[in-house]
Image (cartoon, rainbow, N blue to C red; front, side):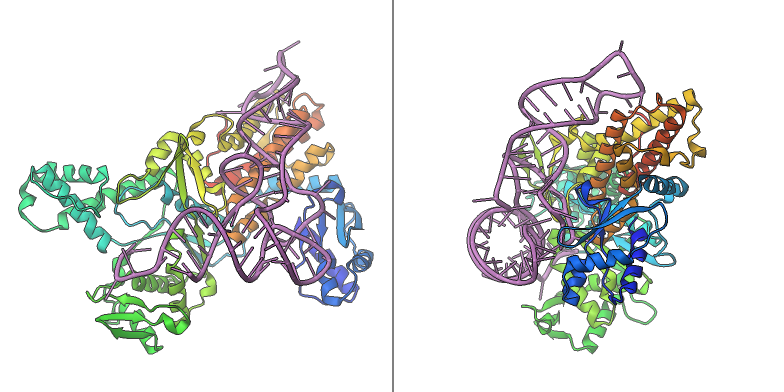
Length: 551
RNA sequence: GUGCCCGUAGCUCAAUGGAUAGAGCAUCAGCCUUCUAAGCUGAGGGUUACUGGUUCGAGUCCAGUCGGGCAUACCA
């Protein structure tokens, strides 16, 4: 609907002889007495032109013109707002687009022909996914869905490392448990992985090999078995949440020598060296970030000869550019917050356009059970497991809980609340609205012969009740809500919006008889219900929750 | 110490620099012989942590103070 106003306002500005490249902001006033839409353009230009905003607004109104039957009144209000009152029938005619566009309602083509990559989860296979990881996973998945609505070809990527120190510790942990299983006395080191899953993996190895491996110091069988088992458990957990990556990028490929005779890692070192940002001392290779104003230089290659995680990270991001992605989104937890700036600096030095990269950092999740906070730690093995959570509250509630709070806020996941199969649980409120509409439409089809599939919304403009107009108008906001989610990489706004739609629908359902209304009014209300169902479905699909037809 | 995030109703959280700061839960009072009551209506509840500043306008931006989380590795 905002697109409807902008050309007219631009026209009025031209007529008034005002040149500006300011973005014209259209908003929906909270109070209906201020109209259906308003703009603050007179304030913005008033400052620029040193003119009284109210006078300017009055002048602009004189130059405004809208199509017949759309805007019934434009007025200046307060210190300089311009408020627009729309003909309700115009709003309701516009709602027909929901039906004509269907599943595509809200989508745009501005990313058509371009590739986007969203990297998320990216947990190394050292243990089962924790609740904390799930938040980033769901956030990333929703962001990928949102980007896909803009026409981009989206790659969902999982970056992992199966060669680093953590994996070494994992393999050792399994070996210790295996040795225990063989009846040997071992001292299990404090810093090693203590979760029960390590014993399970050791048991698997013991069943297959007996105690013959106890004589060898080799870790490879322990590492490979652990990685295989853990990775498949991670993917299984993710798929329970409908998170399915297209691509798994193994960090190790960055160590392999390519046709140019060097590895991607080495290529980064050489390129940074050529720009004068490499120094070598204490047996290590350093990225001289002090030249960029940072306090310390960062190690890229350790004195052991192995790269630190920073180097492959940079090389990995280089591949994202080289693979032709024009939009690059990284989703990770707050604990990795210090990692990205170095990568960005390196990419800038190497001449890449870091403006294509967007980073979504999600704050942590604390889980409470019975009012008690559980702190998570994969190594200590006392982590609350994502799988357990899904078992308890279901996939839909898990997903919704993770994104119903702003990613910048710590999430307090109250398991007791999420477990409740009651109205306290926000997922039920949303899904109930959808199921209610489905039930209604089933009955309408049976009793009144209403054909949902053939409906084009031709009766919508007969609706006049305030709640009907409000609902219709709210449905038209859906595309802009998607834009807003994308601008902030924040699917939480969609949850809020859908909650509002569900609320309006329940209110409409309560106040307006549908099947009992006279035939054309009945048809119009069924059409509005149909439009509501479409918007709910489209929204659910972006959030990755199911749209049950009955509950 | 330094960097990032947060501080809003009793609790969990919303709010592009916009008009009277909103939801849910909890509390209280109503609405089912009628299309799904997993619903709806109404009431109470606030010095937006604090102090200054920027401007037509600040919960939002800036500076500082206080409080909480995370990070400050040759772990990832």
